[in-house]
Image (cartoon, rainbow, N blue to C red; front, side, top):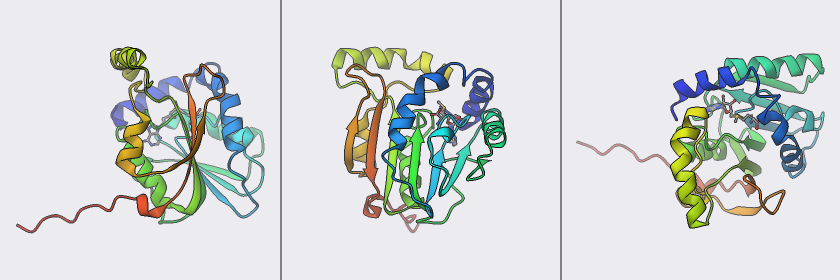
Length: 217
Ligand SMILES: C[S@@+](CC[C@H](N)C(=O)[O-])C[C@H]1O[C@@H](n2cnc3c(N)ncnc32)[C@H](O)[C@@H]1O
């Protein structure tokens, strides 16, 4: 996935997202957000907020900041904010891989169905860790590659098709953990057979990989 094509794909999806995938994910999002324990003074970052399927499930306290690449998705999101008087939420267009926030800005981070959409999922996690306060909660909702070898092969085979639709189907959770150093507090699926999983992490700043200084010539 490349951000330039992702933007176009989701501008297109924005026309029917709420009536299709957006409907499917609501229950899962509501449950995932209940793990955040948001208080009055908290700041929450929703990375790749899309059309704002999550907005209804945030308590109307604290501040929610949403970022998304796609102006089409954001148009739908802003409509929800306006029509429902959600003054606690603000969204803007930006790349979650290059966040314009200072280190340790947010108390909670929500990453819902975005990790397998970005070009660099590991960088997305380290950006989330950077802008999250120490011990902030990072909640990830995503489809990860199955640990069943046969299904994993099928997911790999389907990946080129999924990529055209706007996500990859072959991202293993173990790779994400190994390459970012995050420690998972707990994870669960809503149903025993479920394509999506909720992964809850507490931000440990030590897990952020420090960029290597360039070698002297
Ligand atoms: C499958 S949608 C999920 C939307 C929403 N989070 C939800 O769960 O309904 C993926 C979203 O991620 C956004 N996205 C993809 N890459 C991004 C990036 N690098 N920075 C910000 N948003 C991105 C897309 O524009 C799209 O709105």
